[in-house]
Each structure stands twice: as C-alpha cells, then as structure tokens.
Length: 116
Image 1 (cartoon, rainbow, N blue to C red):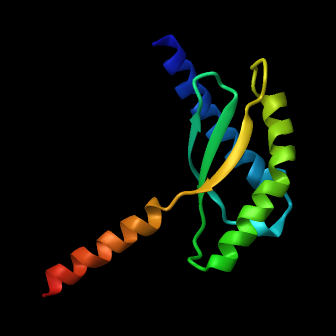
Image 2: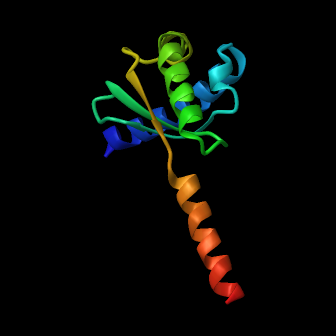
Image 3: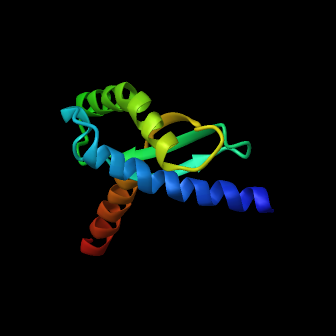
C-alpha cells in the first residue's frame, strides 16, 4: 500500500514539474501549447508514462510535437533529477492523450441527439 502511495505522489510531482519545465526551459517551438494531462509511474519507479494533449487535430502536428518531446526528454529528465529528491530519475515516455478528442466526439454526438 505504501508503495502505491509513493508512486501516486511521484506521478503528481512529475506532472507538475514537467509542465513547468516545458513552459520555462524548453525552447523548441514544436512543444509550445502542450498540456500534460497525467503521469503513470511504474511500481518500481523506474519508468514514467507522460500523457499530453495538444489543441490541433492534425496528424502532422502530432508527429512534430512527439518528435519535439522526444528530443527534449533528456533535458526534461535532467531537470527532473535536480528538482526531485529521488534516487534514480525514471525513464520518460510521452504518449498522446486521446481522451480530449474522445470527449469532444461524445459531446458532439450528445448535441446531435438533443437536436433531433
């Protein structure tokens, strides 16, 4: 139980810090407008999946953003290591959060049903 609490707490800290790092330290124009929506850390605290969303629905923008995040992952991990008080900084992987688009699609369907 304590291990789950620790990984949840670390997930929250990583989410907060990565958002701050992207806003203040990363200068890559490909990652402007990226919102961190969640972080999942494995039980052994060695890997972190960082979920992000962007406002654009274009596949090309998604690829550019993914490439920008992968390019900046070394800087982000280094900054996380200096900001967090943990023994080893987890490896980062960035995954696009599709829940925003899914929620928008559901909202459109509900609006369509209400009009009919």
